[in-house]
Amino acid sequence: MRTTPAGRFKAQCLELLDDVAQTGETTVVTKPGKPVAKVEPIEAPPPLKGSVVYLVDDDELIARERRGVPRGGRVIVLDTHVWLRWQTADEKLSDRAQTASARADRIGVSTISCYPVDRIIYATTLAHRAQLVTRDRELRRIDQGRTIW
View (tube, rainbow, N blue to C red):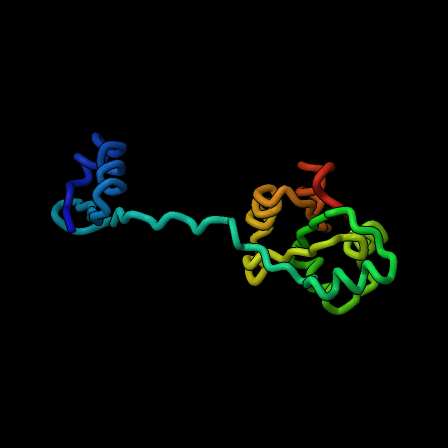
C-alpha cells in the first residue's frame, strides 16, 4: 500500500488514479501525515451475458405449440416488480403485459432482480436484444419501442 500527501494527490489526481487502476495497488491519501482517504482499484463488473434466467422451458414451449399458441421467436425480460406480480398472477399487470408474456417464447428475469436496480435490468434487456415488460414510467419514456406496459 502506497501513501501520497493530499497536495500531491490534488496536483496529480488523474495520474494517480490511472496508476491505481493499472497496478491494482491501493493508495492512501494523507493530510499532515495522517490518513484521510483511500483510493482502491475496483473490480470489473460481471458480464451481462448469462445474467438472464429463462422461466419458460422447452417443455412449456412444446405445450404452447400443441395448444396453438403462436411462436414468434419473441424474448421478453421482466422488470423486478412485473416479475413479482407475474409470479403471483396479480391482475395489476396491464393487458399488453399479460399478452406479451403469454405470447413470448422465452421469458427472462435478470439475476439482478433480487436487487432493485432497474437500469441494470434495462441494460440486460439491451444486451439480449429483448423487450422489457415494465411499469417504470421513466424507462418507458426513454425507450417506447423496447418497453411494454
